[in-house]
Length: 144
Image 1: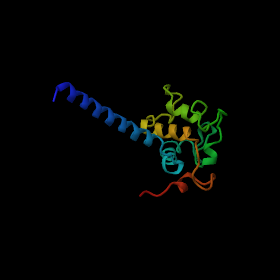
Image 2: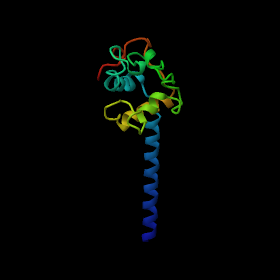
Image 3: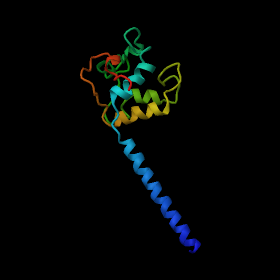
Image 4: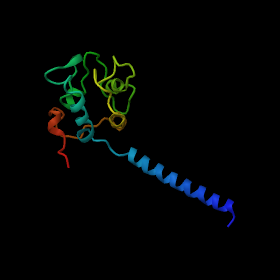
């Protein structure tokens, strides 16, 4: 077989493999993000100490979904469904300026956690538990 034919076949195989990988990645990106399973645990682990019932920096609390969605002193919308630009919490967790970035006085959230918040907001920032007033720890599903 001529080498150019083998090279062409190899390029086609690589293109097919790359296309298949893109399909898998786009399907993964379309997975529904659960507030209960994905977002609430991140909030509890990284935000509750400064934005809970005992301490509410900036007059902002995250200990229930209802409180999470209410603005603090800034009066800016905390999360705006499908709108990253008008979601103050997303702006804060992605801020380059350390004085603006949350969590304050701590390491920034991981890229994986930021991506989960981003996807959840883009998907509509939906609440998938029964009572939006329920304490966040009570709505998190048990580990498998």
